[in-house]
Image (tube, rainbow, N blue to C red):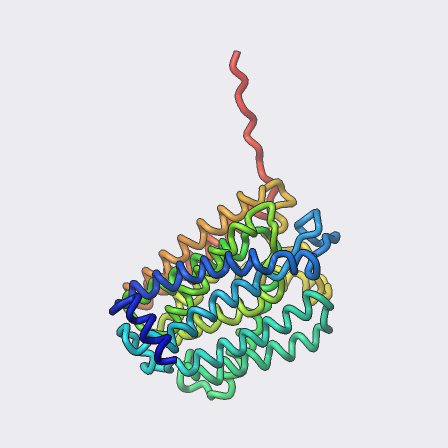
Length: 363
Protein backbone atom coordinates (compact mmCIF):
# COMPACT_ATOMS: atom_id res chain seq x y z
CA UNK A 1 0.00 0.00 0.00
CA UNK A 2 2.87 2.39 0.78
CA UNK A 3 4.36 1.85 -2.68
CA UNK A 4 1.02 2.61 -4.35
CA UNK A 5 0.65 5.70 -2.22
CA UNK A 6 4.16 6.94 -3.00
CA UNK A 7 3.61 6.36 -6.72
CA UNK A 8 0.34 8.33 -6.64
CA UNK A 9 1.97 11.18 -4.75
CA UNK A 10 4.89 11.21 -7.17
CA UNK A 11 2.55 11.51 -10.14
CA UNK A 12 0.13 14.02 -8.68
CA UNK A 13 2.44 15.98 -6.44
CA UNK A 14 1.11 18.24 -3.68
CA UNK A 15 -2.56 18.87 -4.40
CA UNK A 16 -4.98 21.43 -3.12
CA UNK A 17 -8.51 20.45 -2.18
CA UNK A 18 -10.03 22.14 -5.22
CA UNK A 19 -7.76 20.21 -7.59
CA UNK A 20 -8.69 16.97 -5.89
CA UNK A 21 -12.38 17.67 -6.33
CA UNK A 22 -12.00 18.34 -10.04
CA UNK A 23 -9.76 15.32 -10.48
CA UNK A 24 -12.25 13.08 -8.69
CA UNK A 25 -15.08 14.29 -10.89
CA UNK A 26 -13.14 13.63 -14.09
CA UNK A 27 -11.87 10.25 -12.89
CA UNK A 28 -15.35 9.13 -11.83
CA UNK A 29 -16.86 10.22 -15.13
CA UNK A 30 -14.32 8.30 -17.19
CA UNK A 31 -14.54 5.27 -14.91
CA UNK A 32 -18.35 5.25 -15.07
CA UNK A 33 -18.35 5.34 -18.87
CA UNK A 34 -15.68 2.63 -19.07
CA UNK A 35 -17.55 0.34 -16.68
CA UNK A 36 -20.75 0.79 -18.67
CA UNK A 37 -19.01 -0.18 -21.91
CA UNK A 38 -17.57 -3.27 -20.22
CA UNK A 39 -20.85 -4.28 -18.57
CA UNK A 40 -23.20 -3.50 -21.46
CA UNK A 41 -23.09 -6.96 -23.12
CA UNK A 42 -23.97 -8.64 -19.81
CA UNK A 43 -26.74 -6.14 -19.06
CA UNK A 44 -28.22 -6.58 -22.53
CA UNK A 45 -28.32 -10.30 -21.99
CA UNK A 46 -29.45 -10.59 -18.37
CA UNK A 47 -31.01 -7.27 -17.30
CA UNK A 48 -33.48 -6.16 -19.96
CA UNK A 49 -36.35 -3.96 -18.77
CA UNK A 50 -39.32 -4.85 -20.91
CA UNK A 51 -41.96 -2.15 -21.45
CA UNK A 52 -45.40 -2.40 -19.90
CA UNK A 53 -48.45 -0.17 -19.58
CA UNK A 54 -46.74 1.98 -16.92
CA UNK A 55 -43.37 2.31 -18.67
CA UNK A 56 -42.05 5.41 -20.40
CA UNK A 57 -39.99 3.35 -22.85
CA UNK A 58 -41.31 1.33 -25.80
CA UNK A 59 -38.55 -1.18 -26.54
CA UNK A 60 -36.67 -3.58 -24.22
CA UNK A 61 -33.77 -1.63 -22.72
CA UNK A 62 -30.98 -2.90 -20.48
CA UNK A 63 -30.95 -1.68 -16.90
CA UNK A 64 -28.21 -1.86 -14.31
CA UNK A 65 -26.21 1.23 -15.18
CA UNK A 66 -26.27 1.99 -11.48
CA UNK A 67 -23.59 -0.67 -11.01
CA UNK A 68 -21.17 1.51 -12.96
CA UNK A 69 -22.33 4.72 -11.29
CA UNK A 70 -21.91 3.31 -7.79
CA UNK A 71 -18.59 1.67 -8.63
CA UNK A 72 -17.27 4.89 -10.16
CA UNK A 73 -18.29 6.70 -6.97
CA UNK A 74 -16.82 4.30 -4.43
CA UNK A 75 -13.52 3.38 -6.15
CA UNK A 76 -12.11 6.95 -6.39
CA UNK A 77 -13.13 7.67 -2.79
CA UNK A 78 -11.32 4.54 -1.66
CA UNK A 79 -8.22 5.48 -3.69
CA UNK A 80 -8.28 8.95 -2.17
CA UNK A 81 -8.61 7.63 1.36
CA UNK A 82 -5.88 4.99 1.11
CA UNK A 83 -3.28 6.78 -1.02
CA UNK A 84 -3.59 10.54 -0.93
CA UNK A 85 -5.68 11.85 1.95
CA UNK A 86 -2.87 12.56 4.44
CA UNK A 87 -0.88 14.65 1.94
CA UNK A 88 -3.42 16.84 0.15
CA UNK A 89 -4.57 19.02 3.02
CA UNK A 90 -7.74 17.03 3.67
CA UNK A 91 -8.83 17.00 7.26
CA UNK A 92 -10.60 13.64 7.15
CA UNK A 93 -10.61 13.44 10.93
CA UNK A 94 -12.52 16.65 11.53
CA UNK A 95 -16.15 16.66 12.59
CA UNK A 96 -17.71 13.29 12.05
CA UNK A 97 -14.55 11.92 10.44
CA UNK A 98 -13.93 9.92 7.31
CA UNK A 99 -14.36 6.62 9.13
CA UNK A 100 -18.12 7.11 9.07
CA UNK A 101 -18.09 7.40 5.28
CA UNK A 102 -17.33 3.68 5.13
CA UNK A 103 -20.58 2.94 6.94
CA UNK A 104 -22.45 4.99 4.31
CA UNK A 105 -20.66 3.33 1.40
CA UNK A 106 -21.24 -0.17 2.78
CA UNK A 107 -24.93 0.65 3.33
CA UNK A 108 -25.12 1.95 -0.26
CA UNK A 109 -23.57 -1.27 -1.55
CA UNK A 110 -26.13 -3.24 0.48
CA UNK A 111 -29.00 -1.30 -1.11
CA UNK A 112 -27.41 -1.81 -4.53
CA UNK A 113 -27.49 -5.57 -3.96
CA UNK A 114 -31.15 -5.32 -2.93
CA UNK A 115 -31.86 -3.27 -6.07
CA UNK A 116 -29.99 -5.70 -8.31
CA UNK A 117 -31.98 -8.64 -7.00
CA UNK A 118 -35.21 -6.68 -7.36
CA UNK A 119 -34.33 -5.70 -10.94
CA UNK A 120 -33.96 -9.37 -11.90
CA UNK A 121 -36.59 -10.99 -9.68
CA UNK A 122 -38.90 -8.53 -7.86
CA UNK A 123 -38.79 -8.81 -4.07
CA UNK A 124 -41.87 -8.54 -1.83
CA UNK A 125 -42.50 -4.91 -0.90
CA UNK A 126 -42.15 -5.59 2.84
CA UNK A 127 -38.75 -7.26 2.40
CA UNK A 128 -37.49 -4.29 0.39
CA UNK A 129 -38.78 -1.86 2.99
CA UNK A 130 -37.16 -3.66 5.93
CA UNK A 131 -33.78 -3.78 4.20
CA UNK A 132 -34.05 -0.09 3.36
CA UNK A 133 -34.86 0.73 6.99
CA UNK A 134 -31.77 -1.17 8.15
CA UNK A 135 -29.51 0.66 5.68
CA UNK A 136 -30.90 4.10 6.52
CA UNK A 137 -30.80 3.42 10.27
CA UNK A 138 -27.12 2.44 10.03
CA UNK A 139 -26.32 5.69 8.20
CA UNK A 140 -28.27 7.86 10.66
CA UNK A 141 -26.62 6.16 13.65
CA UNK A 142 -23.17 6.56 12.12
CA UNK A 143 -23.53 10.26 11.36
CA UNK A 144 -25.16 11.19 14.67
CA UNK A 145 -26.29 14.63 13.49
CA UNK A 146 -28.79 16.65 15.48
CA UNK A 147 -31.16 18.44 13.14
CA UNK A 148 -34.15 19.23 15.34
CA UNK A 149 -34.08 21.40 18.50
CA UNK A 150 -32.43 19.85 21.53
CA UNK A 151 -35.69 19.75 23.49
CA UNK A 152 -36.92 16.99 21.15
CA UNK A 153 -35.79 13.58 22.49
CA UNK A 154 -33.03 11.95 20.47
CA UNK A 155 -35.07 8.77 20.05
CA UNK A 156 -37.89 10.68 18.37
CA UNK A 157 -35.46 12.57 16.15
CA UNK A 158 -33.76 9.30 15.18
CA UNK A 159 -37.10 7.76 14.21
CA UNK A 160 -38.03 10.83 12.17
CA UNK A 161 -34.67 10.87 10.38
CA UNK A 162 -34.94 7.17 9.54
CA UNK A 163 -38.48 7.67 8.26
CA UNK A 164 -37.37 10.67 6.18
CA UNK A 165 -34.33 8.79 4.88
CA UNK A 166 -36.39 5.79 3.79
CA UNK A 167 -38.84 8.10 2.07
CA UNK A 168 -36.01 9.91 0.28
CA UNK A 169 -34.46 6.64 -0.92
CA UNK A 170 -37.82 5.53 -2.27
CA UNK A 171 -38.76 8.83 -3.88
CA UNK A 172 -35.47 8.85 -5.81
CA UNK A 173 -36.39 5.34 -6.96
CA UNK A 174 -39.95 6.40 -7.83
CA UNK A 175 -38.77 9.45 -9.78
CA UNK A 176 -36.29 7.49 -11.89
CA UNK A 177 -38.84 6.78 -14.59
CA UNK A 178 -37.75 8.96 -17.51
CA UNK A 179 -34.59 9.21 -19.58
CA UNK A 180 -32.14 11.70 -18.05
CA UNK A 181 -34.49 12.66 -15.18
CA UNK A 182 -32.11 11.44 -12.44
CA UNK A 183 -29.19 13.17 -14.16
CA UNK A 184 -31.20 16.41 -14.40
CA UNK A 185 -32.02 16.23 -10.70
CA UNK A 186 -28.89 14.83 -9.10
CA UNK A 187 -26.12 16.54 -11.08
CA UNK A 188 -27.13 20.03 -9.85
CA UNK A 189 -27.44 18.73 -6.27
CA UNK A 190 -24.14 16.85 -6.18
CA UNK A 191 -22.41 19.60 -8.15
CA UNK A 192 -23.56 22.16 -5.58
CA UNK A 193 -22.40 19.97 -2.69
CA UNK A 194 -19.04 19.37 -4.38
CA UNK A 195 -18.58 23.13 -4.80
CA UNK A 196 -18.87 23.49 -1.04
CA UNK A 197 -15.38 21.97 -1.04
CA UNK A 198 -14.07 25.48 -1.71
CA UNK A 199 -15.12 26.45 1.81
CA UNK A 200 -15.15 23.16 3.76
CA UNK A 201 -13.33 19.84 3.94
CA UNK A 202 -16.26 17.69 5.01
CA UNK A 203 -15.99 14.20 3.49
CA UNK A 204 -19.34 14.70 1.78
CA UNK A 205 -17.85 17.12 -0.76
CA UNK A 206 -15.50 14.45 -2.12
CA UNK A 207 -18.21 11.80 -2.32
CA UNK A 208 -20.45 14.40 -4.02
CA UNK A 209 -17.75 15.14 -6.60
CA UNK A 210 -17.38 11.43 -7.36
CA UNK A 211 -21.13 10.85 -7.67
CA UNK A 212 -21.56 13.94 -9.86
CA UNK A 213 -18.80 12.74 -12.19
CA UNK A 214 -20.20 9.19 -12.26
CA UNK A 215 -23.64 10.50 -13.25
CA UNK A 216 -22.11 12.63 -16.00
CA UNK A 217 -20.32 9.54 -17.29
CA UNK A 218 -23.64 7.69 -17.30
CA UNK A 219 -25.54 10.54 -18.99
CA UNK A 220 -24.54 9.82 -22.64
CA UNK A 221 -25.94 6.28 -22.33
CA UNK A 222 -29.19 7.48 -20.75
CA UNK A 223 -29.93 10.42 -23.05
CA UNK A 224 -33.26 10.14 -24.89
CA UNK A 225 -33.84 7.61 -26.32
CA UNK A 226 -31.92 5.78 -23.58
CA UNK A 227 -29.67 2.83 -24.34
CA UNK A 228 -29.33 2.08 -20.63
CA UNK A 229 -31.29 2.64 -17.41
CA UNK A 230 -29.97 3.01 -13.88
CA UNK A 231 -32.28 0.36 -12.46
CA UNK A 232 -33.02 -0.04 -8.75
CA UNK A 233 -29.38 -1.08 -8.36
CA UNK A 234 -28.57 2.58 -9.02
CA UNK A 235 -31.52 4.64 -7.84
CA UNK A 236 -31.65 3.13 -4.33
CA UNK A 237 -27.98 3.73 -3.38
CA UNK A 238 -27.99 7.14 -5.08
CA UNK A 239 -30.96 8.08 -2.90
CA UNK A 240 -29.09 6.91 0.19
CA UNK A 241 -25.86 8.73 -0.70
CA UNK A 242 -27.57 12.01 -1.57
CA UNK A 243 -29.84 11.74 1.47
CA UNK A 244 -26.74 11.32 3.67
CA UNK A 245 -25.07 14.34 2.06
CA UNK A 246 -28.16 16.47 2.65
CA UNK A 247 -28.34 15.23 6.25
CA UNK A 248 -24.74 16.29 6.76
CA UNK A 249 -25.49 19.68 5.22
CA UNK A 250 -28.50 20.15 7.48
CA UNK A 251 -26.34 19.17 10.46
CA UNK A 252 -24.18 22.25 9.86
CA UNK A 253 -27.24 24.46 10.36
CA UNK A 254 -28.05 24.77 6.65
CA UNK A 255 -31.46 23.09 6.91
CA UNK A 256 -33.08 25.43 4.37
CA UNK A 257 -30.40 24.64 1.78
CA UNK A 258 -30.80 20.89 2.42
CA UNK A 259 -34.53 21.19 1.72
CA UNK A 260 -34.22 23.49 -1.29
CA UNK A 261 -31.77 21.35 -3.26
CA UNK A 262 -34.08 18.31 -3.73
CA UNK A 263 -37.32 20.30 -3.51
CA UNK A 264 -38.61 19.31 -6.96
CA UNK A 265 -38.29 15.59 -6.20
CA UNK A 266 -39.73 16.10 -2.72
CA UNK A 267 -42.82 17.92 -3.94
CA UNK A 268 -43.50 15.81 -7.04
CA UNK A 269 -43.16 12.49 -5.20
CA UNK A 270 -44.91 13.56 -1.98
CA UNK A 271 -47.90 15.18 -3.67
CA UNK A 272 -48.24 12.17 -5.96
CA UNK A 273 -48.11 9.79 -2.97
CA UNK A 274 -50.76 11.72 -1.06
CA UNK A 275 -53.04 11.77 -4.10
CA UNK A 276 -52.66 8.02 -4.56
CA UNK A 277 -53.36 7.41 -0.88
CA UNK A 278 -56.50 9.56 -1.16
CA UNK A 279 -57.60 7.35 -4.08
CA UNK A 280 -56.80 4.24 -2.00
CA UNK A 281 -54.36 2.94 -4.56
CA UNK A 282 -51.60 0.44 -3.78
CA UNK A 283 -48.80 2.97 -3.44
CA UNK A 284 -46.04 0.36 -3.62
CA UNK A 285 -47.01 -0.62 -7.16
CA UNK A 286 -45.63 1.01 -10.32
CA UNK A 287 -47.73 3.78 -11.85
CA UNK A 288 -47.71 6.79 -14.18
CA UNK A 289 -49.07 9.44 -11.83
CA UNK A 290 -45.97 11.61 -11.28
CA UNK A 291 -46.07 15.11 -12.68
CA UNK A 292 -43.11 14.49 -14.99
CA UNK A 293 -44.96 11.46 -16.38
CA UNK A 294 -48.11 13.52 -16.87
CA UNK A 295 -46.00 16.08 -18.71
CA UNK A 296 -45.03 13.54 -21.39
CA UNK A 297 -48.69 12.50 -21.64
CA UNK A 298 -49.61 16.17 -22.03
CA UNK A 299 -47.38 16.79 -25.03
CA UNK A 300 -44.01 17.66 -23.49
CA UNK A 301 -41.04 15.90 -25.03
CA UNK A 302 -38.59 14.10 -22.78
CA UNK A 303 -35.99 16.78 -23.46
CA UNK A 304 -38.46 19.54 -22.58
CA UNK A 305 -39.29 17.87 -19.28
CA UNK A 306 -35.61 17.53 -18.45
CA UNK A 307 -34.91 21.13 -19.44
CA UNK A 308 -37.58 22.28 -16.99
CA UNK A 309 -36.25 20.06 -14.20
CA UNK A 310 -32.59 20.94 -14.77
CA UNK A 311 -33.28 24.67 -15.05
CA UNK A 312 -35.47 24.60 -11.95
CA UNK A 313 -32.76 22.81 -10.01
CA UNK A 314 -30.18 25.41 -10.98
CA UNK A 315 -32.50 28.09 -9.59
CA UNK A 316 -33.07 26.06 -6.41
CA UNK A 317 -29.30 25.69 -6.03
CA UNK A 318 -29.00 29.47 -6.33
CA UNK A 319 -31.59 29.92 -3.59
CA UNK A 320 -29.75 27.36 -1.44
CA UNK A 321 -26.53 29.33 -1.92
CA UNK A 322 -28.36 32.48 -0.87
CA UNK A 323 -29.41 30.85 2.42
CA UNK A 324 -25.77 29.97 3.11
CA UNK A 325 -24.57 33.52 2.46
CA UNK A 326 -27.35 35.22 4.42
CA UNK A 327 -28.31 33.17 7.47
CA UNK A 328 -31.13 35.35 8.82
CA UNK A 329 -34.47 33.65 9.43
CA UNK A 330 -36.23 36.03 7.04
CA UNK A 331 -33.95 35.03 4.16
CA UNK A 332 -34.37 31.32 4.93
CA UNK A 333 -38.17 31.59 4.93
CA UNK A 334 -38.22 33.77 1.81
CA UNK A 335 -35.97 31.36 -0.10
CA UNK A 336 -38.00 28.31 0.93
CA UNK A 337 -41.25 30.05 0.01
CA UNK A 338 -39.96 31.18 -3.37
CA UNK A 339 -38.57 27.70 -4.05
CA UNK A 340 -41.91 26.08 -3.22
CA UNK A 341 -43.74 28.53 -5.49
CA UNK A 342 -41.37 27.88 -8.39
CA UNK A 343 -41.67 24.11 -8.02
CA UNK A 344 -45.44 24.47 -7.79
CA UNK A 345 -45.51 26.44 -11.04
CA UNK A 346 -43.50 23.74 -12.83
CA UNK A 347 -45.76 21.00 -11.46
CA UNK A 348 -48.80 22.98 -12.57
CA UNK A 349 -47.30 23.39 -16.04
CA UNK A 350 -46.56 19.67 -16.26
CA UNK A 351 -50.12 18.76 -15.27
CA UNK A 352 -51.73 20.74 -18.10
CA UNK A 353 -51.71 19.95 -21.83
CA UNK A 354 -48.96 21.78 -23.64
CA UNK A 355 -50.29 24.59 -25.83
CA UNK A 356 -48.80 24.54 -29.30
CA UNK A 357 -48.28 27.93 -30.91
CA UNK A 358 -49.24 27.71 -34.60
CA UNK A 359 -46.69 29.03 -37.05
CA UNK A 360 -47.79 32.07 -39.02
CA UNK A 361 -48.03 31.28 -42.72
CA UNK A 362 -46.46 33.99 -44.86
CA UNK A 363 -48.25 35.02 -48.03
